[in-house]
Image (cartoon, rainbow, N blue to C red; front, side, top):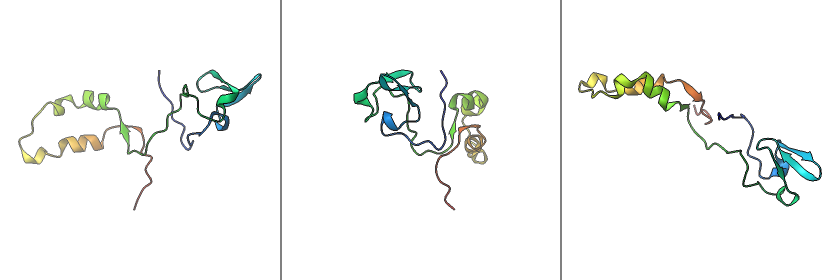
Length: 107
């Protein structure tokens, strides 16, 4: 099953403050992200079933499998000539980005 990323959303500390928690009497909320009910005693914490995961600070994320498939010829060669030393680095620079960096630009 594919995943989604919601930019600009911070990880909620508790189920009760989560935007995916919606009232469903007699329970305090129904988790629309995980499709389960939250008990009254659990609204002041995050449930162990929570499907949300915080991404750590990272650079651009690429699809390694796609990169390997597209560049198999280069990845399986030994480059003896020094003028080809940066070839793999150049290929990585051009790899399609799946999720852009979330690091703040420093200039």
